[in-house]
Image 1 (tube, rainbow, N blue to C red):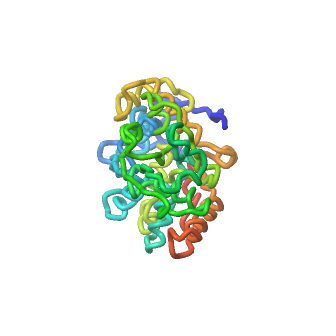
Image 2 (spheres, one colour; image 1 turned 180 degrees about the vertical axis):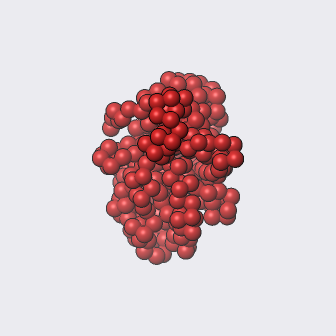
Image 3 (cartoon, rainbow, N blue to C red; image 1 turned 90 degrees about the horizontal axis):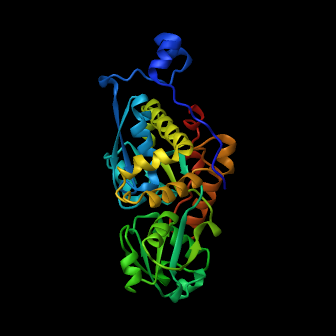
Length: 341
């Protein structure tokens, strides 16, 4: 997977006004908003996590001014896993949720009406890792083991469950332990045998001295999206313009970050709770830049949702008994907003 050659040049407002005049600019570039203080709208983003280095492009959108340019003020609502983030949004504490597909399936199974509007990370980054001494090399080696997850509502749990299901096991065959975002002490102290995590979490632990590990990658069994932006169906039409502007600002930040990685690292180091070491920030950020793209997004554009892949994953969830009902992802996932970016 290679980083896109997509380029982005951000003209200043003064250059735009001088070149064409306010009226002409509005006609030629309708996405540029004349953002006065009274026009700024707050968008509450319910995230699966606090502000982490891997989300560097969002901080770039804030710092460089892409959200403001779209008339938006971003409010970050932190969570402990995708299920937590989606619950926050459904409870009315957020306008848009940053969640994994597993949260969508589970909520839709219980009757929640949702719209997935942007694929943040179209490649699966989840894994299960263990110290070499544990000799956990294949999924079958997980049977009977204590395995750490971020939380019982996180993608780490459900991607582990997917790996187990595709190898003839279930959660009943292991013991799950919720560890939060920092599992290194539990692993080093032998409190768990393995940890279900993401590539960036694993990298951070290894950089901190975790040691050599064996890794089982979820993508080797089901390579579907890691995270998407999701809204409630009832707000999709009334707030379509607002959501489109939010996604436009988000994607412009991603495009800018791809071309200005040193600047993005500097911005992120001041914001992320794990941003003290610029080298680790850079590595974590690059992992996310890579998984933000795949063959589908290179063909149709960043954020494009592969509905067929999500449908395959939803079927697996039903077959494995995670959900009871058939989920029609073509009714939930839409590329209507991505097409406008």
